Length: 216
Image (cartoon, rainbow, N blue to C red):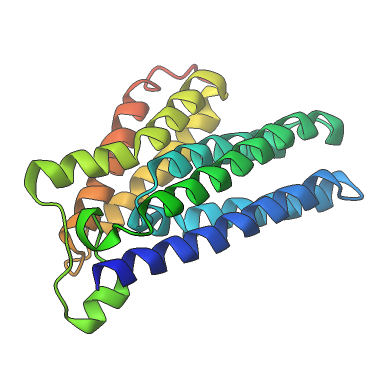
């Protein structure tokens, strides 16, 4: 069951990241800036919706690559011209491509050892089957979640340091609020509780650094 759960998560992760790559490529070769932004937003939406799926798969290198892609995709939407946005889009595409390669290597290295060695977060398939899976506990779980969100933490650092203060504040506030609301769900598994609690903490710390935004 552990093997099936992790393989399933990684298969979805692979499909998702290929989709993100294709939308980024379409954004680069789009006929105009508005159409480019349309494809960028589709890529951004795919990253946000599949974030936990990548955590379930367990490939930290791909998560870090996607967090970098996420940042530069957002930068592309804020560019003053289509040509300027392409600079960020090419970096995002490069990061996504690296993430695909890392994920492929990860799957190859662990294809024969899922059953014994992988740390698997709770997924819908595992819950529905009511079968036990190998799950990290205590400090091990905390460290696993921490490692999975290193890229996310770096991404927010970049937002704090490089994005206009009020805009950064609004963006991070939204992340903090979404995590807070998610944590109100009493049905969350322990791994997901720790995941969203860590997201909330990282966002809170980032907002603390933006408290002195200059007044308009």
